[in-house]
Amino acid sequence: MEVADKKEPKKTQSFTIMKDDPIDGHPGYSGGGSFSLENLSPIIVDPNEEKAFVDMGAMHARSVVEKRIKFLPDRNEVPNGKLYWIAWTTVERDEKGPFYYGVAASELVVDREIRRGYKLLPEHVNHMDKALKGRVIVDHMDDKSKKVLGDFLKEFNPDMWDNSREEVHKAFDE
Image 1 (cartoon, rainbow, N blue to C red):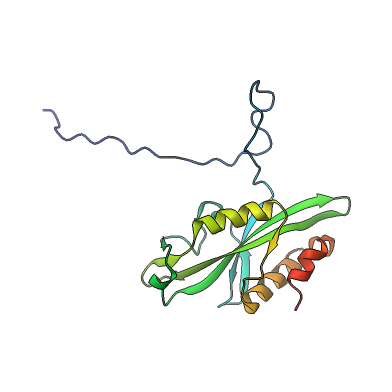
Image 2: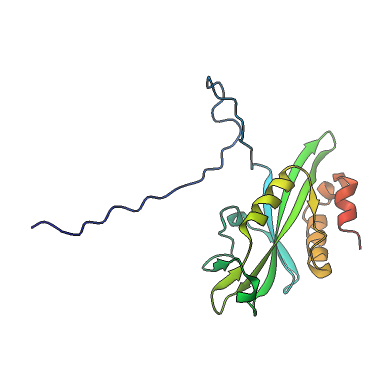
């Protein structure tokens, strides 16, 4: 007996984060357009609970805050949502040791009851890129969220905080 309605297997796309230079020595490839996400960490800021934590799942939109949520591009569709931030944070190293290099925060609004949320993916991608380039973009955060993030960075590794550029320090001054 032959099955009349065979379905094609679903094709999936994957994104692989590559460490260092996986094509080192490959002739004809200049490496243009590639970048490393090795020093990038997403910090989830929850101003409602006044806490922050690193959640690497956010690199693929799978943080504890984002799981099982359908995100919409219109904030008005999530009127009862809770505010969160993902602070894309990069770390670099110099002769003094590691330091916070770039921090750019992106907004999330999540309503667990209706399993819907608000986020602008282009903003998240742009903020990731800017953090990788050493930019500090936190001025658009509310004061409470910015304080939670600043306190987390200071407490997580005081040496990294002390070694950070003046621009990072000024962004979190009270």
